[in-house]
Each structure stands twice: as C-alpha cells, then as structure tokens.
Amino acid sequence: MPRPDVLETLVSLAKRRGFIFQSSEIYGGTGSVWDYGPLGVELKNNVKARWWNAMVRERDDVEGLDAAILMHPKVWEASGHVSGFSDPLVDCKACKARFRADKLGDAVCPRKPSKQPGEHADCQLTEPRQFNLMFKTFIGPVEESASVVYLRPETAQGIFVNFLNVQQATRQKVPFGIAQIGKAFRNEITPGNFIFRTREFEQMEMQFFVEPGTDMEHFERWKQTRLEWHLGLGLDRDRLAFHQHTDKELAHYARAAFDINFDFGGTLGFQEIEGVHNRSDFDLRQHQEFSSKKLEYVDQANNKRYLPYVIETSVGVDRVTLAILVNALREEAVEGEQEGRTVMGFHPALAPIKAGVFPLTKKDGQPEMAERLASALRKRFPVFYDEAGAIGRRYRRQDEAGTPFGITIDSDSTANDSVTIRFRDDMGQIRVATSRVAEVLGRYLEADHARADSRLVE
Ligand code: ATP
Image (cartoon, helix red, strand yellow):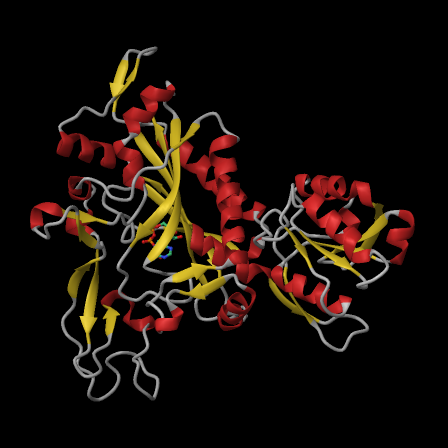
C-alpha cells in the first residue's frame, strides 16, 4: 500500500506556521524557488549543524571548507559540466509546455482532460534537444563570452580544486575527507514537488580521498555511515532504502554508486535524498590536466605518489528537510477531546523551538514567573512564550510547530516554585522544580531521543 500523499497538506501548514513560503509571492511567485520562514530556517540550520557535527567536528579525518559559488569557468570544462550537464528537453508546439524527454511517462500535459504529453490528438512534441542546466552569468561590466561564469551546480568542485590546499594546510594523510555545505543552482526543466526539486538549493557534500585499491572498502563504510545518519534524524527505517545504480545509470567515470532513497508517499514514492559515489580519480585527473598543476598526493612514509580515488557523499539540505517534514507530520485523535491534533513529531534535536512556556492564567504572578523562566531558558534553547487563549489551544499550536516540550506555570507553581513539563508525543507530564527545568531539558536533548516522551526522562 503506498503511503498517502501529504505534500498539499504540508505546503499549507508550512506557509501558515512559517516554515516555508513561496519566493516573491506578492509578485505571483518565482517558479520553484522557496523561502524559509522563522521555523523553517531554524529547522534547516539544525539539519546542517547535525551534519557538520557528524561529518566534521566529531571526526579527525574530515576537514571543513566553504568555497565560493563563483569559480573559474575552466573548472566546469574540466568537470564535464559544460559539455555534459544537460537533460533532454522536448517542447509541445500546441500548448507551449516543456518536458524532460526521459521523464515523459511521469509528466502531465497542462491541458484538460489530464493526459500525458503526446496523448492529446493535437499535441506536437519536438525532437529532444540537450539543455544545459547551468545558470550562466557574467563577471564584470561587459557581457561577452570571455567573461562568462556559472553559478555552481554542485559544491563538490570547490573541494576538488582545494584538495592540496587543505591537505597541506592541515597535514592530513590519505585517507581523509573535505566537507562543505553551500548553495547550488540548476536550471531544472521540470522542477516541482515543493522543495523536492528546486532551481536554487543547498547541498552538504563530503569527498573522501583514498588510496586506489582501498576505495571499495571505504565506499561500503560510507554507505552505512550515511544511512545511519538518516536514521539518527528519526526517519522511519522502512521509509529508507538503498538504490544501486545500474550500469546504464552509472556515470562513465564512476566505479559504484548507491542512492539513499526516502519514501515521500503518494505518486512521488521512493526518491533519492543522498548519493554515495565512488568517483575514481576522475575529478582530480581532469583538474590536473586542465590546470596543468600536479594534484598528486605524496605519501612520504611509503615513498609513493598518486592521485587519490574519491568516495563522495552528497545530500540535499532541502530534500532532507522535506523528508523530515513528511516523516514528522501526523494527524491523530486525542482521547477525551473532539478535535484531533496535528503534530510535527520532529526529533527534538531538529525541532525549531525546543520549549513553549505557558502561564495557565494571566493573573496571580503567573505571567511574570513564566516570562522569567522563558528568558532564562532562552540562553540555552529557542523558546516560545505564549499566554494567549485556552491552554489546550496553546499546546496544539506548539504541537503543530513540532515543539517537544511545553512548560506550564499554574497556581501551584507560584506557591511552591515548581512547573509541569508536557511532552509532545505521549502528552505525559512531569512536575519539576523551576530551577531544574534547564537541566532536565538539557539532559533529555543530550540523550538524543528521537521522540519527546515523558517515559524517557531519566
Ligand atoms: P536528481 O536525479 O533527483 O535530479 P541528481 O542525481 O542529479 O538528482 P546529485 O547530482 O547526485 O543529484 O545531487 C546530490 C543531491 O543533491 C541529491 O541527492 C539531492 O538531495 C540534491 N539535489 C540535486 N538536485 C536538486 C534540486 N534540483 N533540488 C533540490 N535538491 C537537489
């Protein structure tokens, strides 16, 4: 049974709650470009921080980098993007729509009744032509061919051209990796499905440089490491699967490639969120040839020099964020209440707001006590203070934002300096001394539980 399609529900929740807005909406929007709102930017930053910690900070064999988006145009000749980074495009002369020739089966003609392109009697599809996906612009004031530059379509090339800079500056020995997070741009022919395929997006890429001959063993290790990272985000195990590239899918230089796929539900189903590739020494060899600079690694201890092979892990920030949103969305009944609730059941480490602070009433010193607690907690966590409306409604608003902990100040609180902490997923409550709230939440977050559940408190 396919999982339900929740994209439409998510698009409206994301807008209403301030996760994601359409870009330039007041002008009618820009095609497949999205802006992250107050909750979205926190969620996305948490995803990036989690990747950076796992890939760079917690390891001593991977170094960080932040290379520029604009690069020397020869980079893209060497990488093969100028000649080969294209999709086959067909136009329909009848309705003016454009489709990817290799994805016609998944495409829908914009005219009614709904059919595939070519299925209406008067469809006029052109022969496919290759369309390069790189955005071109000009450096400096003159728009001429000598000043063409590209917006990078992937972050990886910034790592390859800095391979020796990083190796020499850090004195790392092969095997070691370089990681970076940054924007990439692709003039996709058929973007869509919300933030799944967009023209401006972010990637988190890591290139691990290894001695030829040891590459497959590193490849297998990275495959597992990366799958575990996704599981650690709280993504359901049965929504994740490896997809091995067939000979037809494999790039000519690649020795092996696996995608990590996530089940987005509906017609989208299982789709790639990350690629793990064994790229051989293709990229370094190309850059060595095009730049005429030696890029060999010198292994002094063993008196060898060689071009390392590269194992690449490449994941889209936006696509993983969409997977997290899809995975988190639940609509459930609440015992004893007529209305159910919508919950974004994020892993607490990813939740944009960690705690809501609520005075039960607006009197008896409760708001003052709640505000004092909220501002103390804000030094450590993003906190939302809310005194408006019935307490049940306030809980529901935070459930929808995915906030794992709700802290309520009631009449007992002012009398004996204690508060309740409500846990988002089981809705269980515990009572703790006000002075211990930060410590209890801090300990819970450190334990890295994927759910907010009162039964998991130590
Ligand atoms: P696809 O086949 O889906 O276009 P790809 O195989 O071209 O993806 P890669 O070049 O391997 O993708 O890029 C690595 C990762 O970057 C992908 O797994 C995905 O998460 C992300 N990514 C690539 N293109 C886009 C896009 N247009 N919008 C959002 N994320 C993207």
